[in-house]
Length: 208
Image (tube, rainbow, N blue to C red; front, side, top):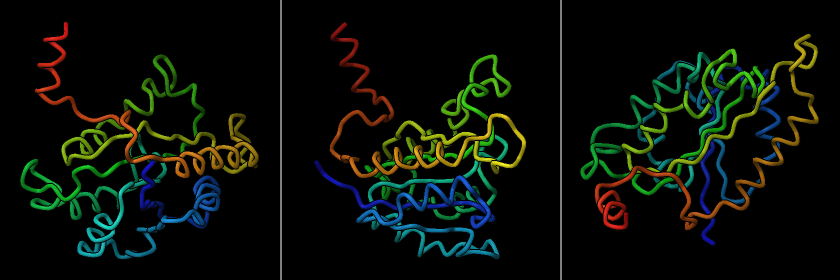
């Protein structure tokens, strides 16, 4: 087993008021070889230090992108961060900007709505994984290994009056599951999802 150096990039404009993200971070922040990067706290003016962020990426193996699911995507600073940090010659194009090639991506998403709403026919119509396709393609294009996302549902305050809000105990249990996932993560495990390469398609055709 090869354990990763883990970078948790947290994107939340008011992290101190976030019940779900607070519980998740409390459960994992003491793990060995783990760095928490509170991006909004570092850049209250929205001006990204590209060199700092790129060095953090180079110094780690597994990137956890933790954020609320704002309008089926992320808080605005994550988009700004991507535009600046995943720069030409660093993150792309394939074969030229390959600094992230072989790194691993895990999206940890906090959501107010319950899991059953993210289904075909549910109020949100699509699964969380389907709605994260732009992030998945970004990972593929930059040569990274994509993990199935880790959604955490029902994170509204317990006194919100919403029936599907998770209890604190339920959120803690989900945080324990995330900790376990990170504790046992193996960089050499081969079942990470990546783009299918032409040579793989040729081998499949021959085998068929």
